[in-house]
Image: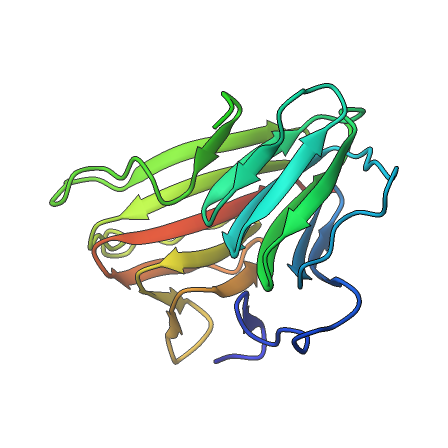
Length: 108
Length: 108
């Protein structure tokens, strides 16, 4: 492997890690690409994300809840979703481990 | 699945498809996210890509060649690489199928 290549499925935080692990892979003027590893964590009660982003689950499983939708969204590997700014959402549940790819999008 | 969710590993082009299949997943002011499925294709001889992009191999395998590097780069699932603009590169070889995720980045 060259020094500028790494692997999305490698270097996971240890099992039972208390916190999700966030790693920024790319920072560009219009987008930030991030790998997130969840180990069963959920968003804190009452917490809602409010950001323009595209997320994909690459391994594991997750349940997203949107403030404006009665039913949660269950994501399995390969599922991806574009979340518009101000569409409040939270992570209700994750498998251990769950590997996410997130692309945070700058407003135009 | 909700109407705004789809799967990176689904809806592959048929085996033996002559052309790579490009699908734009997200178009934003600063980035375009694309799913690419290769079925053994390579870039045409003498062809070099010249674009600012981040690519990951999600399934399959691929060999990238950079005009400025003597050795090719072999990518297996999860491997990702940020390619700076003007770093000419071509796809030398792909497994059938190879599923790529590409994020084309706008210049700042």
